[in-house]
Length: 287
Image (cartoon, rainbow, N blue to C red):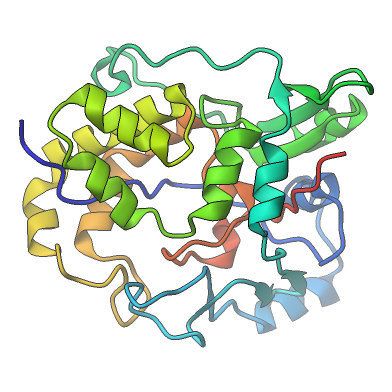
């Protein structure tokens, strides 16, 4: 079996304007559906372009701290997520999902009708009985609908196999999954690769869609990824390298539809930096 050459998952995210710091998650997401501000506010937004990208750059990012930072301060709105600790990630694992996701037993990239995310939906945390640490996940057509039902938005877009709090904990703990996922791609077969992804903390269904994503990207982007194997994630102008662009175009939409949760639609910075317009402003505190 051929080896995966890069951990190739960089999904297209929902286009949502960052919310002012201190807003709750429902208000932050609701900004995308608002009727808009005054002409003065619109003029101020136009005068404050988002020059810096949102992310947590490291030595492989290829951008400076001035070009990419874990906050968005532009267009009249601020979003600076907290730095989540290992203890906070561990606390997420204390919650039990009442109806776990089903396994991804067939390659979604090979289905006649490929899955597609529905614009505007959100995935929300619905707390179980107060005496328990249980919860369910429910897809709502809007953040306003989730709020009206007493639910807490956990990410934009509909719920999927990576939407659980356990998978959120993995993203919190690994701002750069490049090397860990590459290692899993070098496993000798499908079962070993998925087991390696599970060892990172991903639940089985989430590990399965990660596996199918990497396989599909290898099939579609092998040549450009070989050429960019040692390249930084970003070019000097801030754009992604050719391998990551190929992955985002070829594999991103299906992954997003099946997985549900991504870093951008969850409000988490990563070593792949993104325009602030693509980042959903969420802070993760669960009662």
